[in-house]
Image 1 (cartoon, helix red, strand yellow):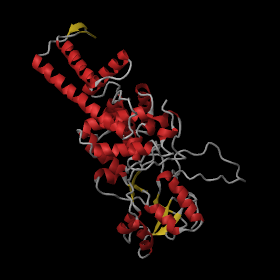
Image 2 (cartoon, one colour):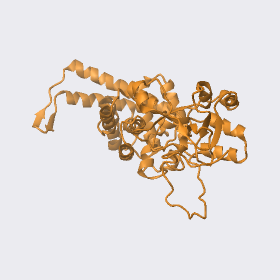
Image 3 (tube, one colour):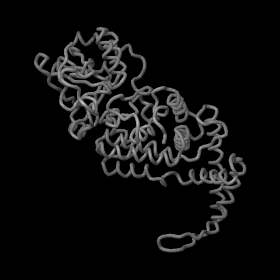
Image 4 (cartoon, one colour):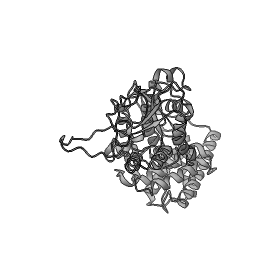
Length: 428
């Protein structure tokens, strides 16, 4: 194994603040635990451990953007050059901590270790280079029968690469400050897939997969559509008005009466307030003072019934939250704004991974998400409960199925893993 300079533009997203004198070679800080494990395995020439680490990691590589845009289901790799290899042609691959800052003209995909052996063709480079130019660099002959040796490690790997786990960039990602706080608001979304929670320079699941996710789940296919969704999620008044009415009414009762709110009293208050509004309200608008029209009795009763049913759903979810440690005893969810703010943090990074925005725009949106969360909540635990309730009200329909259990498991991880941003990044 040999070392050499990395291709231009690659390496940790944030360089060291200063460079030691030439007579004192700088110590290399592995950006994540992946590169740390690769370096340690290489140092002791334990190639079994090296390949096992690769088999448990996403391996990113550059692809042609024009090809991906023309045929989203097709992946066309961009091969590199390294004078240390016979013929010069290589297939450069990078682990998560060695990715470049997102560039409009360079996009990446990722695959598992075994995939490279399966798709290799005689016209492809004969050498795969892992993290070129770094201390954890390695050369893998990509043609059979050599590839069979390292490909076996991928076949033996049982745990899925996208399993839930806390990953942190030690270098190239913020660990404190407003950007870190905003990124931590989206931790449930990224820890869920084992992606680094603080990777502001985000490539995620790869260019094609990120675009597919935005298209299928959000209807976003352009920069303009991404901007609309991003603004909507950051809008402090953009939450579900019925959910916020019910929760806001409970907050008012709790403030007025100093604490616990009986569910029956909450239901009765819903009926009183909605009936009072049914007779028409005098409101001030930009056009002057107006009176809202009277609402028919049947419609009012239907509204009351619907909101009272919602009150029941909320209280039953909260009871389950307390049983599962998401809420402390005698605590309740103050708002589900976190459901939007957490996704706003995610939308910023998805937009960057899809090249619908710049790094500067994504970072600004992440900071705004963190600030909005800090205005609405007191702690990560409060924020998490609001996010999970919003997700459950939207998707779960009181089945307490995967929409809920997945979040409960992730909550436990984020509240217990020593590397979790919810334990290392102050909420305010």
